[in-house]
Image (cartoon, rainbow, N blue to C red; front, top):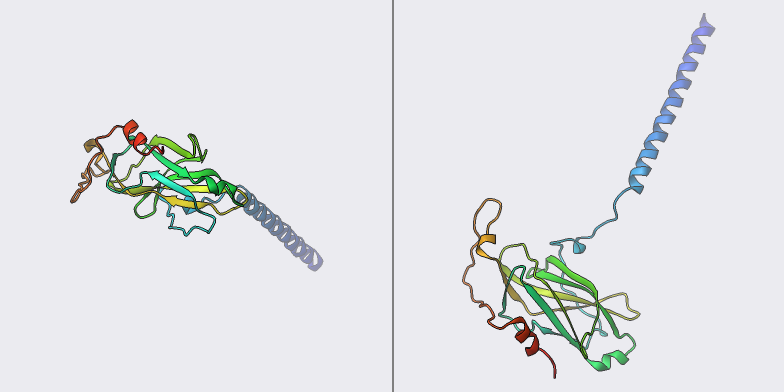
Length: 209
C-alpha cells in the first residue's frame, strides 16, 4: 500500500513538471513570435505633427539658396497650389561633397511640427542652376505661420543639409474654420495680406537672369 502511494505521488510530480515545462515553452514561443511580428519603429520626426528641431548645418552645407518664398509677409490659402524655388551656386559642384538631390521637403509649423511631407528625391535642377517643386499646401490645422524645410543630400555624406524658407501665413476658408465642437477659429490681429499676383508672375519674379 505504501509503495503504491509513493508511486502515485511520483507520477503526479513528474506529470506536473512535464506540464510546467510545456507551458513555459509555449509562453516563450508566443513571446518570441510577438517580438518578431512587431511593426518597424516609427520615430517622432517621421510622423505628422512630429517635432523636427532646428539643426545647425555642417561646413559643407553651402551654396544652396531658397529663392521663393524668401521674404516674410505672404499669405496662402490651405490646399491651394504653391511652389518652392531654389538655386545652387555652380562652384559647389566641384567640391569634395557636391549636392545630389533634395532628399525630403516638408511643410512645418512655426513650432517646428511636421504638417506634411511634400515629397522626396526631388531633382536639384530643372532649369539652369535652379530647381523647383509644385504641390498642394496641405495644412489641416488652424490658421497660423508655417515654413518649408528642405533636406539636401550630398555625395558621400550621411548627414543631410537642412534649409528653411521664410515664414508665411496659412489661412483656411470660412467653412473650414470649425473644429469637432463646431467652435469657429478666429484670426487675431491679422497683418498679412493675400498676394494679388498670379502663380506665373510670382514664379517669373524669382527667375534668375
